[in-house]
Amino acid sequence: MNQRTGEDICDISELLEPKFFKALCDPNRLEMMIHLLHGGVPRTVGQIAESARVDLSVVSRHLAILRDVGILASERRGKEVYYQVRTGPLIQTLRKMADALEVCCPPAAEEREGEAAGGQPPKPGGTAQAKGPPVATAQFQGTPGGSQEQIDER
Image 1 (cartoon, rainbow, N blue to C red):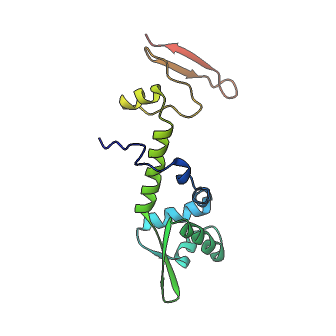
Image 2 (cartoon, helix red, strand yellow):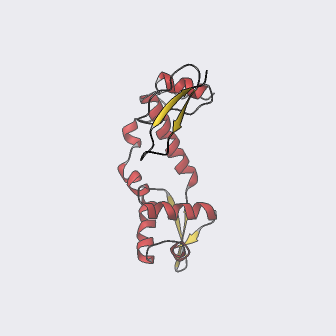
């Protein structure tokens, strides 16, 4: 397994750039980025605008924001500007963030045990799974939101 040391990973504060997250937090920008990823080829502002829910001028501004933080590459061909996702650098940035978080804030013991067993780590804010035989939870339809009853399957 390829383990990285803390020296290999930049200080996490250097990686958590607010402009990067701000660029990704807008649903319209995410939709445009997904459109570009699905196509797999560079597209013009006009082509991207055809599938967007906002006007052409707004599409252009959104694309510029994604380009300015390094998520998109742009290339002018005559009067048209073509955009495409810079997948390599994007993957590298996200991987560095994940690695830095893991070094600075290692997962709790329960999370590591669950991942080693092939399970998913607990959801944030969730409670740790109890050890022992499985316990089913029945949802009753009669009350709003349903009441829950635990059924022991031993």
